[in-house]
Image (cartoon, rainbow, N blue to C red; front, side, top):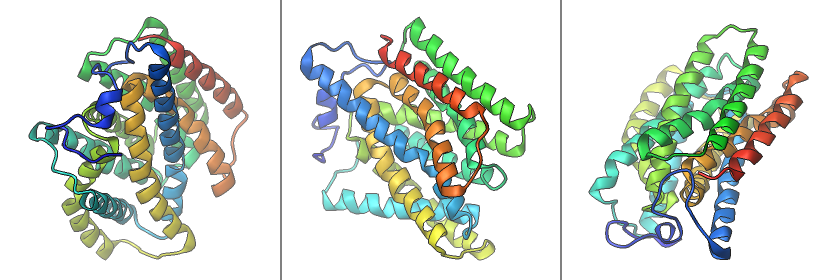
Length: 319
């Protein structure tokens, strides 16, 4: 990916992606179809990377305190991103992009990781995964409010059906009672949706990896200060699990996953890309069984089937 200043020259994404930031561009011909397909693949790779975030966080919490884990995760990601930006001599973003980058930083780099990590102290990864399964719907709503996108009625019907399936699964798992962990998770949905929406918009004007890279750089001073304080009061023990969890959360989820995710959103539009995340809780359920030994209820396969149908419908609905 060519590193260049979006203020002076259009990025490669800006050439291939449409100017509209809505539910999907009006594209025609095999080249545009291939671009949409590549965007879908990249967004799906991002979802796959994100699906391992909760299990890796659970591993990290086995030896590292929650505030320390989030701060160190951010520091490691920012160092990697900063190294890439320096090595490629990427100019600073245009002034008009900094407000959007701050939203990405607050929602995706700090807010969502912190709130979900706090939730995972008392919640299983399986339960957290199905609650966060509401993220596609909240992201689509934020996209409409922020960009003026107008997805079709079929799109919204399928999105709401998928959300209803996730809510039903969550209620069945929790017995109808919301815990403090659930409140953390619901708050994380709102701020993450805002960060995803703004990041998807910015990824149409600058390469997706630069969006998350600069957002991480913005958070580096706060993350370093937070780590210095948290490590004095929280446990810190590097075991095999805690080390692997921290490294994956920092590199695989917070950096590489967001790189392909934002590029995918730029190619196919925020609302449609967000619906691919309906598969994320189901993937996380699988990882929770194989990596953490958690047990699933019989409702999981039924929810999986319903959500996969909704994904198929939303990807075919025309915005």
